[in-house]
Image (tube, rainbow, N blue to C red; front, top):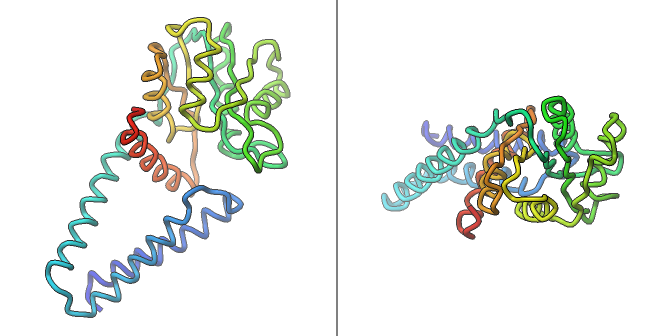
Amino acid sequence: MKTLGILYLAGGIACIVFFFVISLFSRFGLSIAWVWPAAGAALIAAALLTRFDLPPWLRYGWRGLLIAGLALLMALEGLVISGMNATAPPGMDYLIVLGASVYQDGPSPGLTRRINAVMKCLDDHPNAVIIASGGQGRDEPISEAQCIRDELVKRGVDPARIVLEDKSTNTRENIANSLALMARPDAQVGIVTNNYHVWRALRLARRAGMVNAHGVASEYTGPTLIHFMFREAVSITVSFLRGYL
């Protein structure tokens, strides 16, 4: 097998192994996780095809598409990475905590990290109203907003300080519905979400009219981060195509 074929084969096997690793970490609950075994199968097929004398247009066409796709992915990941260390200046009027999955036994790791992040920054924003944002998915026992509120109250946050927004089903709706609960659109707002999600959330917020929106990135590490960064690149592309960004 040619060197290029070996590289394709190694990449394909790595994609399939990665799929099982992140699935175990996430209880097989990740959206679009199928992309990894699909990519693995495509790369393994490409490895096998290197053994045949294919027409030049097919060989170079495939390589061109692969290179173009990787270049686009790298550009999109640059946007994602640019928001991963975002912080808000002290004195926010609102802190919007964006929802994430709720398990039967409590918040998912991603949502827990968002709750941790808002707890860490409360001293910097003593007068901020907290908007817990997120509806209830079909497999969730309670709404994401309710889960955020319950966890914050357990940690000592005054319930009177928390406003629930429990109707949204995606980030765009999180922003729009939270904006409707704010006294004025030019308020100083910190949007609390996982680090890989900050750039898109901020773009959506500013497009919706939150002119003074700031990102508050919660730390997210581990093997699933790679998947979430890839998924975010896909979401950014879809949002651009739909005119949301």
